[in-house]
Image (cartoon, rainbow, N blue to C red; front, side):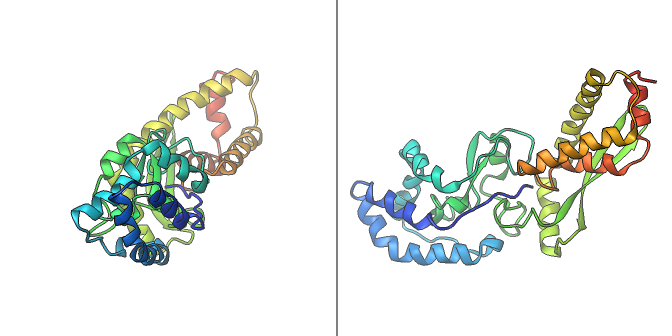
Amino acid sequence: MKHLEMNFDQCWDILITTTKGKEPPRKGILERLLPELNIRYDEYKQKCKSLEYVTETVRSNEEKEALIHCYESPLKKISSILLPSLKRVQAFCPYCLVRHVQTRDHFLPKDYWPDFSIHPANLVDVCYTCNLSKGNRLIKPRRSVLNPYFDGLDSCKLLRCDIAIGDIIEASYSITRDYGADEYLYDVACRHFEEFGLRHLFGAAVASRISNLYIEISTWASQPFEEQEIKEKWEKLVAGLNKNGAGCNHWEVAFFSKLIEMDGVSTHINKVVGLC
């Protein structure tokens, strides 16, 4: 549930460069396919906001093998070609926002859309768990995964954080249709939230963050602090997260943004960390 930048400019050049580097018979197969692949790349760009409507590829076994081989062998060489065009650096998986990036997902699975096996806009750096969970599904019959490039996740708020303050701070998450999200995007977000188990995952992440929050405050606060003091610190924290590309649909941004809106937080924290 995170927006990433994508530049289409070099997508075609990458395919041409890769084709030139192949050996026969794959090179000949790819060269024959180039006119059709040019049309397919245009289709991908035109339908980028609803990629589930991109026509599935019908290829011979030899054509499919040559197309997928562009990505799979030799992977290090292909990655060196792809990385400059992807123009993104992220530590965390954009599908779950909790686990670190470990592998690369084909948004349209290459088994069904081999034409886009090395299309940069079809490649998403993700964690192993999300990659395995998504696999070749979640695109059809209805899309159940958000696209971090094209779904406009930086311009609408979908993630809601509810906070209860008792003996400790407790937070829970849900998907809400607020602040500019249309019905289609809301429906996809709801399915994404359930398919990737984000209710549980965000809940576990925020519980750990709350524990660390008490520890952090106890290290710098030597006397009771005022509400405005702690909220100013959290506003700077949120600004830093957003500067690094987190956005309003990140679990940590949603949590601290909600804390900033609430009254009585300083009284609770002063008590928990022993400052009053």
